Image 1 (cartoon, rainbow, N blue to C red):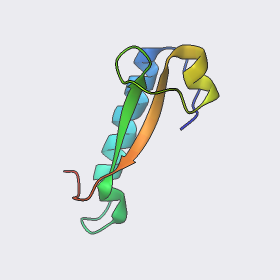
Image 2 (image 1 turned 30 degrees about the vertical axis):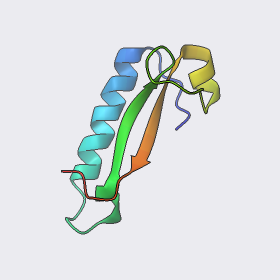
Image 3 (image 1 turned 135 degrees about the horizontal axis):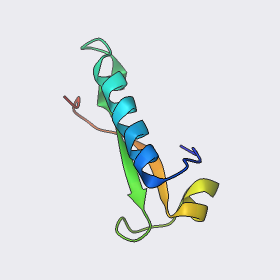
Image 4 (image 1 turned 90 degrees about the vertical axis):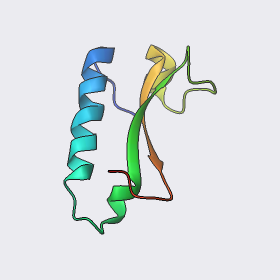
Length: 70
């Protein structure tokens, strides 16, 4: 997700807000299988997928899991 946040703290808050919104969906919603997480160039491995990630070294990513995340 290419979201140019002003700083890492704001990007972390966005991740938590998105996580809460996904958890608020109905129990059988396919969105329950999605988990937002922060990619960090220094610790996550791989390369940035967005312009914001290349610029800042951080990006918000969404991953789908086989089981619903609670």
